[in-house]
Image (cartoon, rainbow, N blue to C red; front, side):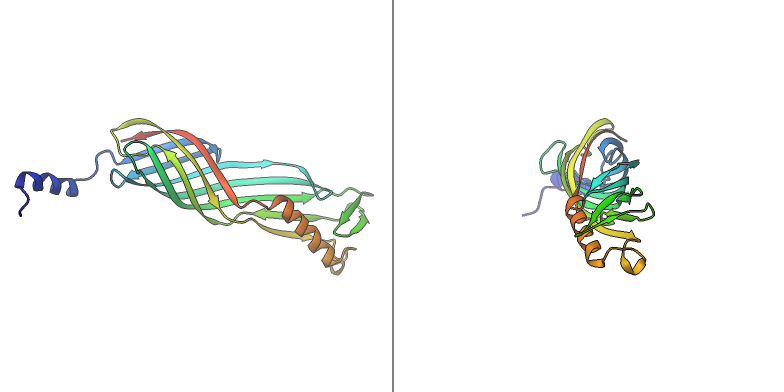
Length: 219
């Protein structure tokens, strides 16, 4: 049975005409602290996005496993997303990839005459020793989340929100002059134990959260 012409023509037009008001720019604040991006609606249920976000660099000092550290945090990332809108309205499911420059650098602050325990060994420092540690998230991480906004709609201002996580395991590396073969007084085994304990303390992170609120403009 042939479809009536008055039904076939609108269907063909819907497939060939571009989606009205498909482009959108947006800004958000939260975690990462500031982000800016572009969204494009493929159809009423699917959208594609890309953005960049940063919290900049900031200092964070503290103590881990009995050693005082001067810390510096870098948090920058770019991302590409696909948004799926299962219902009419702004609620969406989001998946994608984040490209990260996210790391914590810990530089030991060992004072002359200070007693510290490295692994199973206690030493008295002369002030020249160092144990510097880097905790770094993977460069590429998968992202899953939910959110609101970026749906196909009329031109104008809108509200956007995201709640999700980038999934990945932190990697720990170190640099030190404490090891015996480097002129220090601590065995490799004690250093390995100290780094293992440090890893358990500060590198349990298996994901990076994203919680952002923002505004968008569709044109």
